[in-house]
Image (cartoon, rainbow, N blue to C red):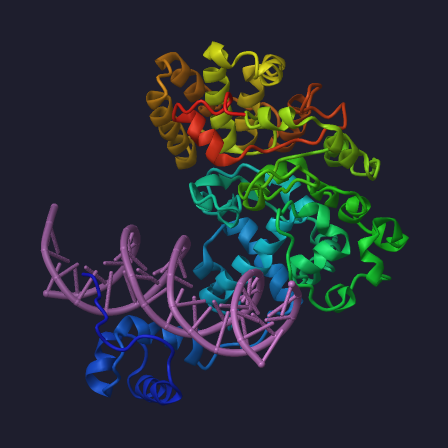
Length: 463
DNA sequence: AACATTCACAACCGCTTCGTC
DNA sequence: AGACGAAGCGGTTGTGAATGT
């Protein structure tokens, strides 16, 4: 069934376009493999269909996405995940390819920058809607960080409702503009702390005013203290915008887990991985900012605390807690925890981590799963099986697997998902070296280290 | 000016789904 | 029921323009 296209490839010429248009005009759409036979076009049917659908269709709307369309895309992605065709069906004149490209470039740039993709209320209104399996929010995948281990659709999240679209509009009144900010520009204008790149971006494009249409926003964007009040207070996003970490945009912690797009504000850089992988660092106020966004953080608190963090701490943080990371990391964390607790040889160098683990009862992880997953969801099972594989490799006991599977099989929620999420988050962010009471910024491990650890590689001693 | 890098977009590839026989 | 072909879909790659060094 493989459609082998021995025919011409590459960009279409206008002559080819004309032939195809003429053919479709006479014969209608469909039966694309017949195009080559009957029109003399040296293109395979698949290519013809794609060309027609993406470029030649008369009802196509060309040009840039309007702010409304961008907003709609964000909304639809939260709702549908990477279902580009379905999203395109909701956006007349737009193609799945167009939307996909848009998302993969502009939107993911926000992820890399550690900026939120979804407005906070979009994430706060997470409801479990098991009867509507497709209508879920997918966690944006992490491939922009070099982690292609899991596709976003494997992390389907509960139904997102958009009850506060009015407020949402407020957020997006600037976010689409931010989408147009090249990372380097953001870097040079105060977002530099969000780009833990060992090699800073080289391009500095245009003035910020070209990209930002925020009220009263000036090119002093670099200086957070220069934010004008109207902007700062216009929304939960805004209220935190003047802070130094990404979650300060009002994105809740749970949502950050969904977004999985967090970069360290000022994490020390030790290698190329740090350029690609997000660091799950959160300042202490962030939890409050989710539960109560009005609590203003100390602007540079996180940075300071981080700067003061000894390097060894960072290394140890590669064994991580899944507070905000989501399903995968929670599973990895559990595996890591179980493994670490048995690893005497690393005991000393992992004191911090083990202490942290001791402070974090299994309940935490369970709660996190309850908040985010449906035990019947494929993602849970796939995660469990993935863990099963890893634990097998690493020689973990069946008890461990059972334990994790019991975690994954979350049931019996008495509270609403939102309530659960908030209260659980509070549990998660409890005191401790990674908690919210010490101003210490959370750190996300280098994923490969975690995987290596799962696979039995003794990374904790390697630092 | 030459080269390197980044970005956006178009096109392709491989897999899945659907319809027909 | 299953084989087959067509179409759909999502991920990935290729390419040229823009920009920076």
